[in-house]
Image (cartoon, rainbow, N blue to C red; front, side, top):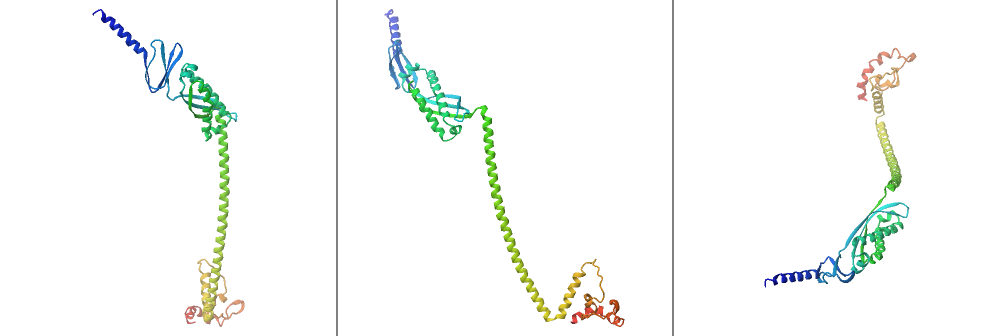
Length: 321
């Protein structure tokens, strides 16, 4: 019995080894290809525990998730002849493990290399039919669809399905960046000058309308003022005329007093007039009579004594009238 235990242990080890070599597990993120002497024997896409021939069969696991690879700094030429740098990425997944094994030996690096070459060509083709502005407009979506559709036939031959292609960046190259900047600057300056000219035109038109309205308003105001002034002057003259007809003597005296005030208001006023001038008749006679004069405009000798006391009496005589 003691000699059988090592043999039993060896047999159990062999059984466990064979069981281990015969079983394999496929999880939800993978799919498996069973290969025997280089030939595909089975393909497992559903997760679970499976069995194969030990030692003879080998299992190759392939990721069935959506994968991504990026393509950076691709130099493309647009329809205008200028060059731009483009960054893009591709979303893909392996849908046909058998074909994927037959074409690229189930190697993702080799598959991505072939897809990358085709992507480079598709980007150049799509950009070559359009200008730079297309990648910055709503046409960008249709461009990405075109690139995706051009990639799909090549990918299907590899057992790969292209889910989506996205353009991440479209930028100017260094040599055309300054030229494009200068052109855009000139366009913006021209647009600014146009807007400024339109603004000046609108400003002049508004100022002309305002000036005309000012002239019309001022003219209307001056006309109304002249009419009012004329009516006031007429009313004043009417009142003066009524006052003059009531007492012509007092009115003449009042007008003379106002003339004295206006003429002699300044302290530095110097007037050279004859004492017998008509201007001073109310200083010599309250009645306004001019005294008699002799030769050379001098008062007569017999009239001098009479006129002398009349001058101070004029203020007292004025109220009597």
